[in-house]
Each structure stands twice: as C-alpha cells, then as structure tokens.
Figure 1 (cartoon, rainbow, N blue to C red):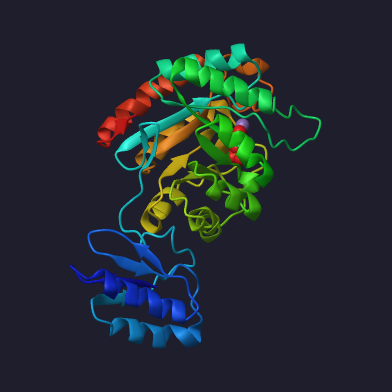
Figure 2 (figure 1 turned 180 degrees about the vertical axis):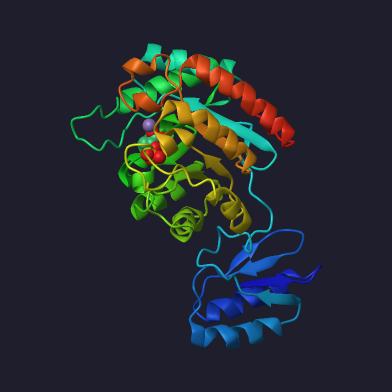
Length: 342
Ligand code: PEP
Ligand code: MN
C-alpha cells in the first residue's frame, strides 16, 4: 500500500500517517520524491486492509491511497515510478547508459585476467567480470582461485581503472568478497539463497542478481525484494536463461521476453547474459544484439584470451577478436536506441 501525500504536506502530517500504520503493527517506509509518500512494503492482512485504507485516506495532508498489486513491493514500478540507475565509481547502470560487463568465466592467473581486462578496456567497456568462487556442477571441476582470485581481480582493476564484478556463493563469504570487488554477483543457482540475499543486502555494495534457471518473474523479483528490504537500493537484475526445452542445442533458453516485462513491472536495471543463456560462443552475438533491441540496460559477456584453454565455460567464451567485433555492433545499436555506452 502507498499513501501519497499532498504537495506541501507537513512533517507532522507524514508522522501521523506513519503512526497509524505502526498502530496496525505494520512497518511504514517514508519515500522521498516530488511529493512524499509513505509505503507499507509487507503484505497487509485482508481483514485490516480496507479499514486501514479508509483511515489513512481520511487523514489531513493525504492525497490518495493505492494498493501495490504485485507480491513484490519495493522492486515494483508501482512503488517507485522512476527507473533506478545504479552508479558504481562513476559508471551508470540504468536507462540511457548501456553497460557491457566483459571478461572470463573464471580468474585463472594474473596474466590471463590482466590480458582479458585489457581487451575489455580497449573495447570500451568499464566493468570487468571474472569468477573467483565458481559454482560448478561437478565437485571435480575447477572451483576457482578463491581469495587469490579476488586479489588478482583487485590488482588488475586498480592497475587498469576498471569496475569489478564477481560471484559470492554464501552469506558468510559476503564480507570477504566485498573487501575486494565493486559489485557482488549472486549466481543463478543461488537466487533463492535467502541468507545470502540478506547478507548481500546488508553489505552496502551493489548486488547483481541472476535469474534462477527455473524461477518465474515473481520469484525473481521477490528475490530482489530480499536485498531491497535490507535498505540496499542498488540491485541489478540479470536474465541469463531458463531451463531449456531443447537438450543438446543450447545450455539454457535465453528468455529475452522477460526484458520488456521486467522493465514494465520493476524499476530495477536489467542486464542480459547471452553467454550462459546459450552456452555456445557462436550464438552469443545474435542474442546480445537482440537483447539491446529488447531494451536491456546492458550485457554480461564471457570472453577469454584463449577460449580453447579456458578452465571453465570454454565453449561459450568469445575470442578477443569476436568480442571486439561484437562491441562495435553493440555500440551502433546502442546509438540507434539513443543510449550511451559507458
Ligand atoms: C557466471 O557468471 O560465471 C555464472 C556461473 O553464471 P550463472 O550463475 O548465470 O550460471
Ligand atoms: Mn561462466
């Protein structure tokens, strides 16, 4: 529920609204804007809702009371009418500012990551990706360099002036990972790891949340709600494909249809990852370009200096040449859409 105050409503009138909400054992949240609004982010019991709406609607200074129709509240465009722009070290992620996060699946060595980062930078991207803690299907597969990988990431980013993003897999690792990187990635497999979402929310770092392979849009946005509910407004959504109907053709089915849907129902920025979305390097470029035209705010793309020897996700990694060529097309499409690449 959102209580919209009149222009010029006094702080006493806003407080009176908050008091009534608190008396009903609900949590009021004051939302600044052109006009102050007071929201109730939690579900309101049906027997309380109507009565509360009448009382609040009759208070001095109140313009109107509206219900948020979706199960997620803080993540909804009904709650916040302006689309969010997340800013990280001067890099804007949101409408009008197209971003590409490029880099290898895993950080494998200083040399490999420094080379990848240099290509990312040369291509005009400002965010470098790379995993230090890898969620692998097999326990025998390369698990990442752990803290050593984080150290490499930080050193390379400091040397080359890039913003960093890496995955954190558990709540008790958030503090460690947050010491080294700029954006915390929550992987598809962890989308509903609620203690992790809460810790990431509390970290104060921007959170990049990937859609779970079998998650509905409601489940995805409710996962984002966990982070927002911790008072962290900097959440970035990532569509990276859902469980495929096909087996043997693509790793996942990239649900590009979710992009305009998410933009319509949520104010959060939406990034598309065609690398995990397809699992096949030659399908990355066509879907990356389609994602730009579908209205995504950016892309996450895996690129390796030498994909053949990559320790993870080698079949979906672009070569430096393919990455450069794709970036040149992306720039043209972004311009066509009237957005700037940053
Ligand atoms: C990754 O970004 O390397 C990754 C493991 O992604 P996802 O969680 O989408 O599978
Ligand atoms: Mn990967």
